[in-house]
Image (cartoon, rainbow, N blue to C red; front, side, top):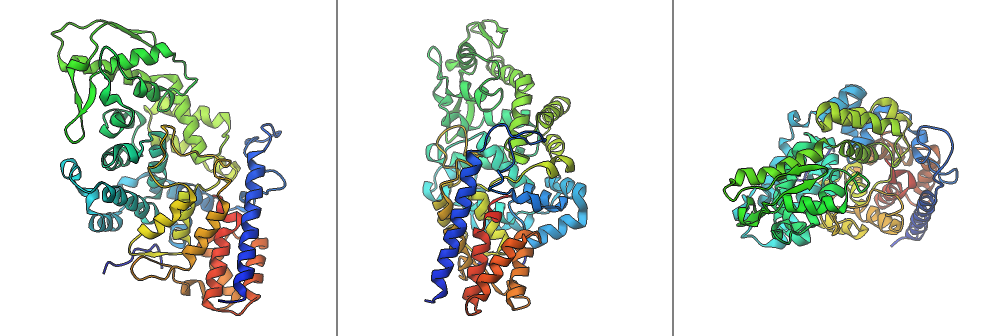
Length: 508
């Protein structure tokens, strides 16, 4: 039997437990509704649009430790070991450690993924012959294992970000998404944006997803040409026109796929006539032009996009929204765009600009999307996992199965989008807290029972799930519930579930 992977180490009460859980869920729903309806102009302050209303207090108001704020923001969830490491290294040291993901020893989780999920290691030709459903499941399982247990947590956060930025639906491309995740997104998540964009532009999964593989003269498909500008680089208001979309689609004719799914340039598909894109003329090519010369038109156009000022501004804004606040200060966005220009789109440098201690301490809390919430609960509850699939598929009921967003704009990073799924969030916490399986997932309650008293349990919940920053109000509520019935293992697990269902735990 496989060894579990872990980070650290009928009753009358059920009716009251359900009532308390529902109450927590309703309270959270109300706070989200207020968040979604928040006025757009809220007075002075660096984050005028980012603070919850007075009726829904911002949990971060009580988060006084900068190091712990950083752990929340750049990991998939608080855990005792992660907090201890961050406090040992300090704010700057911990951020530097996470940014240097390539030198972090992540061999334990990578060995586990390779042994339990062998399809993630297969070359393209072999993948093409495997059962498609199992390939998809192994890709999703690997994503969860890494998110929950990788030591390179910031890389996992950025993999999630770029996966949405360069969205590809698993339902349309199948096994090619596994190759894209492995060789494009993960390989470049903390590199440079130009390198990442060029890699996606030659990803068979991306080309098939946006029908670029079907594009050829004289009637090119415009899907990829449009999305590479609107969603990947310039932004919808970035200064291009429909004519530019049409011209770029002509420039990219010939960029296609071959065989099981490799990038290929087909000269017979390429439009050799003159073109004008974003004000630059591309002269007509002779029939004797080489494949390299024809393909170079597309490479030049992509270089124009990565060097365009709108791209610097768009990527800076989107990264600042992901890492800092839904409505980041314009000064932070401008500084990040300037870093993009100065460093040639270095992702790590932009993250440093965004996540200064001053910026992060001024930023409001952000709301965990379902994937983030589920993974953070695995980390906070110290789950031991032998086979993650059951827990992953149960979490999918919250509405965010990985790689399943069909539109090219990625899963939304907006509080209002997820506001209708509160009961399923609470239900998942109840599910996970009761898991005690030797073959799938186990949450061991004993580390929470040191000492084995109500006060001891709540103190452990505060440390393990909240990094020690548990509000007095929630502490009192948990203690009250735990003391209201017969003290037992079931009661302790219910209290852990309530902590995960609390409004405070939904934010990071």
